[in-house]
Image (cartoon, rainbow, N blue to C red; front, side, top):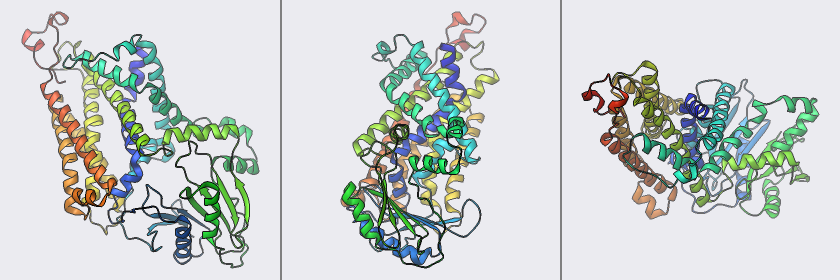
Length: 521
């Protein structure tokens, strides 16, 4: 079990660390998306969703006339604009248009092109620069390795709960082990839940055989789809033009059923045609399930055709596990709890990776000249842990520094992330390990500390303005950057002071001068 725990955690540990850290940040992806679009005004209160839906539907009638489908995400406590996408007549996977709209006027907003927090969310489970299916398979394999590492870790550490209350600084290998144990035990139920539910979210990709055997005909597969998502049978357009009935009235009927502010999305099929259908879906906030709840209306008359309030037991189980993983049901306090415990999970993976090198360095014949495999793991640790902090912060710097009207601007932000990350690996390969750790941790600290300064210089929403206006999204991100900068400073200082002591009795053939010298860690 000890060997299984060690190698299950190491072999894909670098992928797991990136998945954990970007997934942790994704609990505030909507807030990050607001921060990356400073042109969008802050909403002091959530507007009337029914009136907003009508304004946007009227505007889409001009912007997306002739489209076979519209979809509108209404504003709420975490989204200050209306995001809409619509199908176009083009060919290929990107045959759609999208835009953000002002909920007060219904007009399209000209904001900088960016994925914002959505980039970290997508990277978390499908990586990037590779086919989506491949990325999801790699993420799934890594999650399975994580599940094996958690279970084998509990079996291996017989005194894990006792060791949780023991932690000593500056004890070399023992300190890394105790930190790893404490971080593991504190969030053990969460770590198990988040790993298992992550696999459940993509279960149809990883284990499709039962689904393929149970649902064979197109009608059966459509029935299954309706259990898992808001699904409207599109049918064929009639070819006869007909205006939409009052969208505002449809949304108000949904509000009477679910309460004000609880409508999440409005979907239109064949708008402007006599065969139009409209689905008003319930939002995700305050509901620990991702199973679909929606009301379907006849588009031209507003007649209520169907109400889906529940799904089968299997689909509901999947919906609850999915919701537990994403945490979108949570209020601000619960979301911060998710963030903190998930951050501990990230640190658990990171300390495990570092502990592998610390433990094995003491066994090397010559710690100053380790073999290739050890150096490879050590350098990957540096770039995967300290380097990822630099790359993620560089993505936010690129958001502020790249010109506003720039072609493929969102892609340039992502390119900056990967280019900087690659540079951190090159730096780790060229510098001594300990120096590389210290320099990259200090670089991450400097970039994080200066990011609020850059925001103040490049936008009209500096920290003092955000505090005065009660804009807690911008103020919260600025303060969080400083807190994370302080954490990296502490790590850099402790790394600079740390010395790994190699006992001479384990290395009788190594001179005392080498045995007592500071190791790279």
